[in-house]
Length: 78
Image: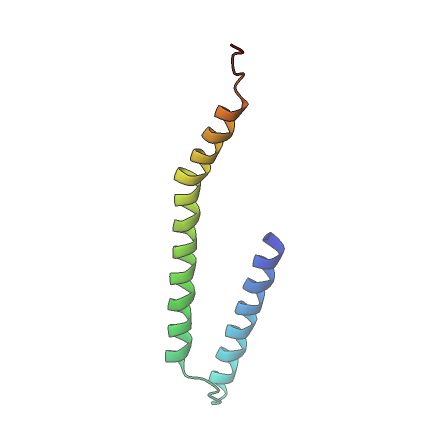
């Protein structure tokens, strides 16, 4: 996961650097408005995924561990 995140972040940095250099030379492949909309979209996806991970670790993961522990208890023989 770290490797994938590192590769994606390197690609984003390189693409933004290329866009800045091309803008300095007067070439406009895509507008900065499009780039900012893409940045906002990535931020919304990142925040949503962090919230989902937080909710999962607080509620769902703890609930499933309680179920596993209750099934491991020794049941009395009557």
